[in-house]
Length: 253
Ligand SMILES: NC(=O)CC[C@H](N)C(=O)O
Image 1 (tube, protein in one colour):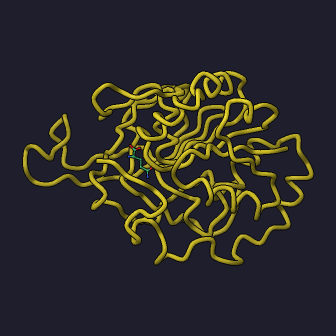
Image 2 (image 1 turned 90 degrees about the vertical axis):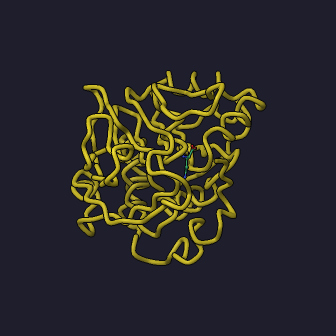
Image 3 (image 1 turned 45 degrees about the vertical axis):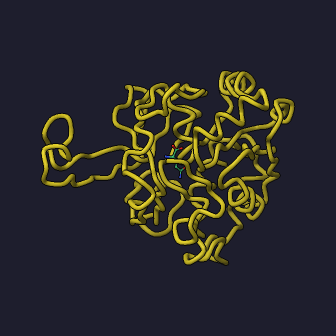
C-alpha cells in the first residue's frame, strides 16, 4: 500500500515523515501520473489558492477529481479541507479550483488572519475510541478554515466553539456571540481536519486515516500496532510555522 501526499506547497514533508515513521510508503505527488496505483491521498495544509494555481499548472485538477471519484480515501488538512469542500466561502476574487466531494460549506479563513492562529486541546471521541491515548488532541490552527454546514452523510468528529466580539459586526449572521463550528469531519472515505496533525508528535490522526485505507492491508495494521506514538517529536513546538513566520507554509492574505 502506498499513500500519496500532494507535494505542491505547504506541509507535505511533515505528512511524509509521519507516514514513513508509521512504516508506510509515502509518495510525493506533483504530476497526474503519480496518482496511479496509490491507495490513498493526503492533501496538506498550506495556502489553498496557491495550491490550486499550482495544481492547475501541473494539470492535476482533473486527475485529482478522478482520484476522488474512485472512492479511495483522501484526507485534507486545513487547505486540504478547503480543496475537498463542495462549497467554499471567502474565496479570492475569481474563485479557485476545488476537488469537492465533501458535502459541506467551509469558510476559508474563518478564524481570521495569521495573527489569530492558535493551538488548543480538542476533544475527539471517535479518535480516542479508535486509537486510545489522551482524551484530547493538541490541535494547531494556522489561519484555519472551519466547517459551517455539513450534509447528512457527514459525521462531525470534532467541533470548536468560538466567542465573537461585542460589536454587531462581530456577531454571526444570527446575532449570536458564540458559534460552534465543525473542525474535523468524515464522509465515507473522505477525512478532513481544519487543523494540522502533521505538525505535532501525536500520530493518532495518521493511524486513524491509515486504518480507513488499510482495512484489508494487515501488514500495515500490524506495523501500526507496534508503533509507539509517544516516542520522538516530529516538530518541536518552537519550530512550528506559526512561530517561525511561516517558513514552510507560504501564506497570501
Ligand atoms: N494552514 C492552512 O492550510 C491555511 C489555509 C488557508 N486558510 C487557505 O485559504 O488556504
